[in-house]
Length: 117
Image (cartoon, rainbow, N blue to C red; front, side):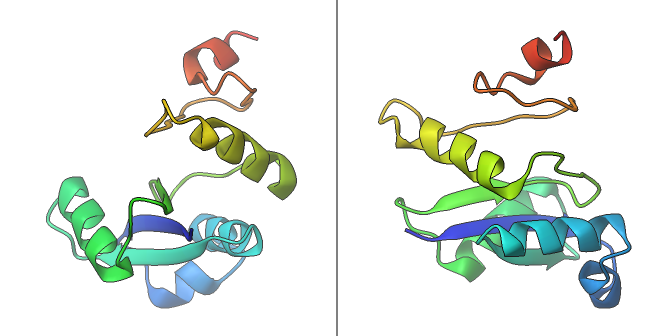
């Protein structure tokens, strides 16, 4: 099982690797957390970026994939971040986990519920 982060971006290669930019911080965090970060540039759409990234990374059904915007910041520490994703995706009933829009992610992984805490 591999871990991929597929991120559509219009940012330069330099910005994606510079830890003082938002996208650079995201790249650094995910890389340090053990995810292979793959930036998709010049995609016609988000779906096109996802499809292109999946094909380029040769993703298999056993792999974990993060598909996210390039302007997000992950506020959890690496261990907690990975433990939440691992716990949820180990459940055979779960095929997809999504979260957005909160400064707090709990074991529920429900951004709307988390934002109310």
